[in-house]
Image (cartoon, rainbow, N blue to C red; front, side, top):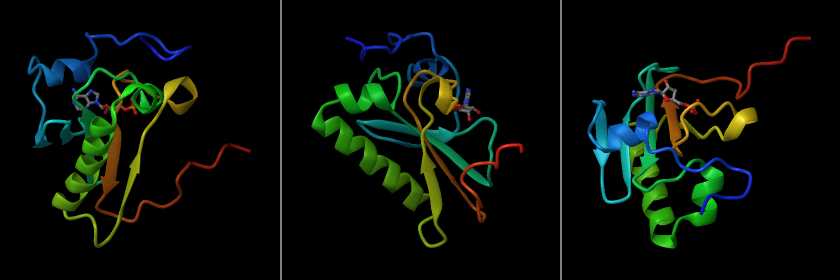
Length: 128
Ligand code: AMP
């Protein structure tokens, strides 16, 4: 059952296809709850996406519908991947885009891990 106001899960989305092995990805980690792979268009020296194995459209969907074990397993994977990428000492940014205003392009929940340089301001300043 989708969260009210959100589209239903689309099994044809690109991350669903990566999970099914239909299209390749540069995998960095996989466990029972999550898959992590390099972003195809990196926005930083390190740019990895972590996605849950389950069918969740967005953070709104995941936070409302996923079981406690899935939530814990997923977020542990996010931390583990950043650690394995060697980002902990210098730091990194973990973020997710949700829905239209968030600029979400792929409708399967994902967390971006960005690092490898000082990232600067979180948002580009709006034009005056
Ligand atoms: P978002 O705008 O938060 O939905 O981010 C979607 C991200 O997925 C973008 O950073 C894309 O570059 C990335 N992306 C799209 N297709 C692929 C793909 N086949 N493999 C890896 N990353 C992808």
